[in-house]
Amino acid sequence: MDGRMAVHFWAPTFKWGITIANVTDFSKPPETLSYPQQLAVAVSGLIWARYSTIVTPKNWNLFSVSVGMSATGIYQLARKTQQDYYNLSEKNVGEGEGRMVTKV
Image (cartoon, rainbow, N blue to C red; front, side, top):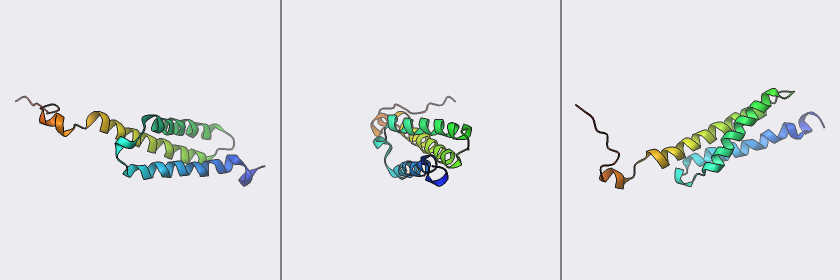
């Protein structure tokens, strides 16, 4: 099968569902995100974006959805990392941890 009937043509269109689902997760709290899941989304997006530019014919739909997947995955990883490692809890701030000390 060639053209519009081939899986090569339609598969990237269904991958947009993963990207859209990841965008809807932007409203979820970062505590509910998964490092392995978001890492898989980001890395697979980067791999498939590269692959889509070296196959013949070039698959621009696959390229665009892969860039979208990697961008949403990286953004979600950044949110999760910021929540887990850079946000200070109320308890820690009260104990003096995390306060910035400036020298005059």
